[in-house]
Length: 372
Image (cartoon, rainbow, N blue to C red; front, side, top):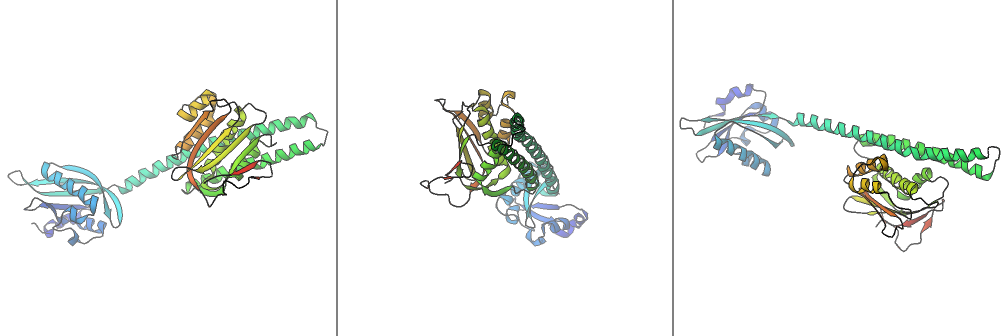
């Protein structure tokens, strides 16, 4: 076997270079490794010389490299391959080219290889993909937030119209309407602040927070039903999930139920439970007139319909991007509708037992224990 000293010129190359000698048993064993490769791997030359890739690299890494070496030996042609290798405790990606050297009989006697580290290039590509994904995410959140702000604006317009009917009377009803306006304005500002906060948290890669599920539902209802017309029942649960995603999804589901239920006083029940591993499942049922045909197409088949509005389609995309699902159906007896969606997250702590008495909140809405 030619000595390492014979390949000293390889040390002038600023890239990993190595030589594989085909021994008497036909095995491709390392005969030389240049200084650049040794510095890159942070390993001594003795770890390589006289050994095959099976001996140098652990498990699947070694098997893959060894197979590539044998393939180049058998083909007798220049070959290029890409594989991951553990280098200095970090898995890096390399593109390697093997050039065969043959004797007069056409038998491969050695393989000279040189490698290019693709890790930096791949990291740059991954960063670009992450940036584009984050930009698309932020664009979607802004669009959804703008959509959700329409509801409180409509409520403000409606209450303002009622106030104009009796501008000179300082009645109790007028005071209540003014209080409702104040609540809507406060909750709307909270919505804007939470979306902006989500942008900051999402950029750090950890958007999950712990919060009360019924409190979130109440926040949403303060803008969608400020005068407390409808009867809404929610589960009692403390959950850990992306609060903004949960709020946007819930807001749109509740708004659609109130808008299309076609009843003066809707009855809505919102349940949450631990679904499949790592997912929270929310079910919203109501006694309204049910979903339109177009809305069902959006939620069950992801088919965008202009008639169904942007909100449902965007929420479907938002949930699907996180591995969740969204589906809906009308009850066969036409007694209402049911919408179900899931998002990553989990219930925190222990829930009250199912036999516990329900407790009513200050708005008269009943919170029912559930989240087992």
